[in-house]
Image 1 (tube, rainbow, N blue to C red):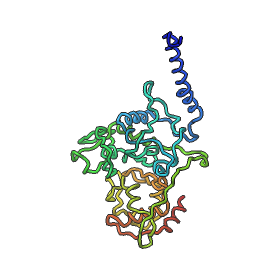
Image 2: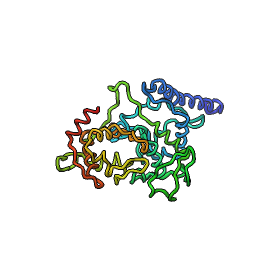
Image 3: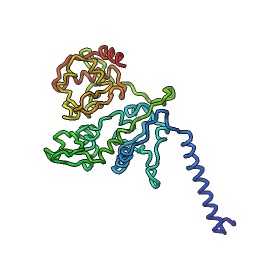
Length: 331
């Protein structure tokens, strides 16, 4: 055949076939995806200069190896976002540079939690800095490595320094001040920018599949059939307030002997759990944990009763009916 006898025709035909397949399989579908997947009406703004730099720190330190940024459409992913991810969530992303297409850091496995909406779930810069310096100071059972090279130790703070309030037992050299480097601050800025955009039309929100029934506990004294308050606390609260309820001085307030926890102002207590708290400059901002996790009155009651009867607290337990009335009021 002439095709095999003339090398120019042979290699020319192979080149044309390669170009055709590249256009048909890769380039044209990509252009079509860009055309039909526009940013959502409430799509988050483009990354700032500091957030872009933080994204590069994220890539540089291999965070993508253990953390994803994609909420699957299964119920178990509901803790990571308000809805399943869709292509439009990534439509604002651009190439890192000419040579690297690292715009979408969706990841492939979850050794750590998904970070799609970490900026909403945990808006506190103080928490992120503590967690980066020593993950066990924020989450006792964490297997994440400590990124101590993103911090420096000083004897005295200098103007402009951002001190990290790490519990003393995690500081290698006592009486030293832990200070965040610019790279640490940039990484935290990027993490805080990760927020899932809402749909304007709620009727087209993709559903979560394989919904799980709520786990019930075996409480007593008027709290039968409530979820496990200790488990809920460990999952949603212990990373800041610590498993022993003592918090982190200068960062997160203690729940042990707290007048809010043991007092009688239940409306304030429930409001803090559901909507967060940010009135005191000496402590970090608390996110709306209850709203982010879609807490039911039973969930809030279980957490409150756990906190009111743990670490030496000896306050009267609350009922689901009391909590439900308050939650209906503060909606």
